[in-house]
Length: 128
Image (cartoon, rainbow, N blue to C red; front, side, top):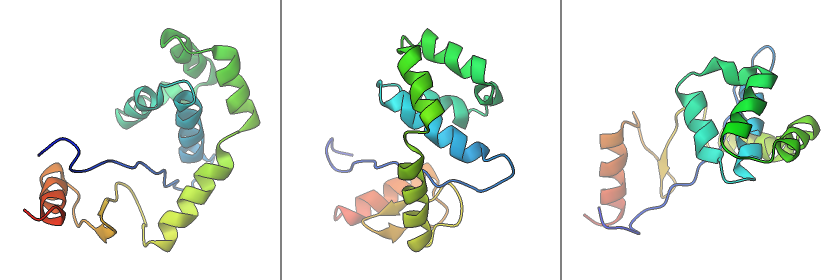
């Protein structure tokens, strides 16, 4: 694919479960994103690193990445991004999202969003 043909827009879709772990993960990731480490935390959660759900481990990982841990901790304690994460969830629900991962290309739901299917949908949307 040509550079600039597509862009990725990531939105959280929290799954409501006991303890609110997916909301915690989303807020934690956004707080890391405030300091340029969104994808590092995202990728750790995607790799099922459940240690990030332990407060001290998450703070330690933030420190390993060179984040300002005081600022990061404040963002988490204040749940600065919770309203945004909840709004993303509501917006997803309104679009028909019921689970993750869900992928849209130009507003069209990609069934079975494997990498090959997503690339094919982007190419089709780009006219070839």
